[in-house]
Length: 116
Image 1 (cartoon, rainbow, N blue to C red):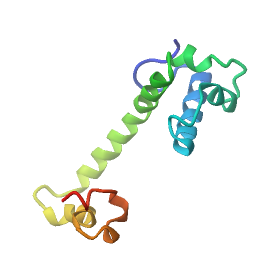
Image 2: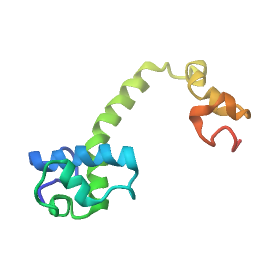
Image 3: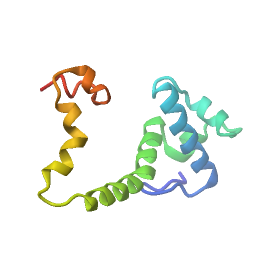
């Protein structure tokens, strides 16, 4: 396998497979995408390319998370640095719609507002 457990894939092919799979999973869901479809849309002539580079479909999902996690953690740290410690008013506007018992006021929170 050519992909380390963390960070970016080592080969251009592995990176192309990863980015293509990420897009296809977002569009069709995990179950709605085959390994062959990923390989074909990534431009690989080898239908076993995903297995070669990532071990399995689940391994590919793990590689997507490992690839994106450093960016997410960096963004999270930047956002945390903007919040004044102890200032609850700065934190409340971002979760306030989710605390509403009226689901129409919290459309982006899923079931979070209804579970309270």
